[in-house]
Amino acid sequence: MSTITITDAAHDYLADLLSKQNTTGIGIRVFITQPGTQYAETCIAYCKPGEQKPEDTPLALASFTAYIDAVSEPFLDDAVVDYATDRMGGQLTIKAPNAKVPMVNEDSPLNERISYYLQTEINPGLASHGGEVSLIDVVDDGIAVLKFGGGCQGCGQVDLTLKEGIEKTLLERIPELKGVRDVTDHSNKENAYY
Image 1 (cartoon, rainbow, N blue to C red):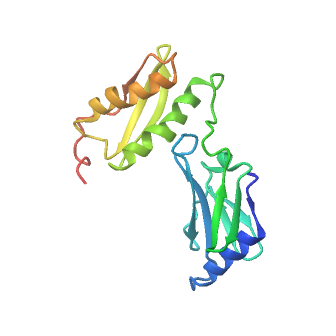
Image 2 (cartoon, rainbow, N blue to C red):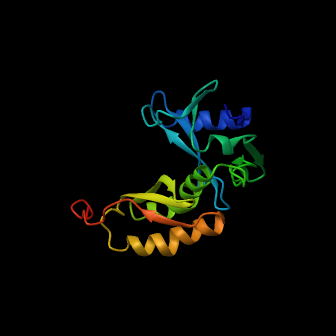
């Protein structure tokens, strides 16, 4: 369970905002975009009943439930959500000291490190094109076998993306990796254009 703290002031402020939404059972969802990278940003969003994900961790507070995103959870350790007032009014602040800290190190297994960089650095870039990539296996002493999904499937640019972007990033991060290979058969173009 992550040790995120939502102060009383933040709770009351959020409860007041939520009460104005006229939605029974509405809560908040706390997540980090690009966790574990220097681009990490902690976000709080309204969460109507049913909008939470099944793997979220519900955190029951006095007036509402905060849903903690599963991928973000380890990065939200020691995070504090506060509401600070000053002369100009007040603002919600989120301090998440571990948001940018990589959850892997040199001693982590190779596949964990590859998956980690795919999730935090590579997929956020591919997401804008509706694509994603996942690790299938590590073979031949250090070749990562990757599977492209979504908008990447059947895309003629995928070889370029693979070599130029993904392989370069992974080799920079993981020196013992030898290269990357693609499992997907890109001759399947039928669901490439949607």
